[in-house]
Image (tube, rainbow, N blue to C red; front, top):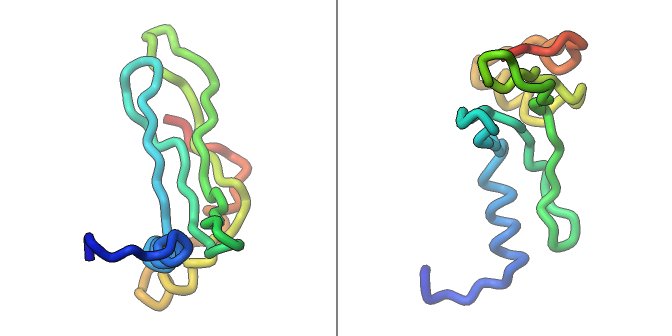
Amino acid sequence: MGNMNLPEKSVRQQISSAISIVVQATRMSDGTRKVTSIAEITGMEEHVISMQEIFTFNKKGIGPDGKVIGAFQPTRIRPKFLERLRVSGIVLPPSLFEKETPVNY
């Protein structure tokens, strides 16, 4: 399919229908890599792939050992893929997406 000239919108539609989750990892100032964002692809708006962030890493500072200190927090948005997970036998508690208390690491 390398020689096919597909319209850009068609390619983006294929991407948005094939990928559900985008996990972003970032190299921190201390050299470690951390997952900094988990987002769900929700579809297309015109020619743009739309996404909603589900979890995000909030950097709090640098510890005495030079390591990045932060917390992974939900955005309080329930992802649309929860029903597909449930049908597959994976049940996530709704509180996972609503917790006020961040997960530190």
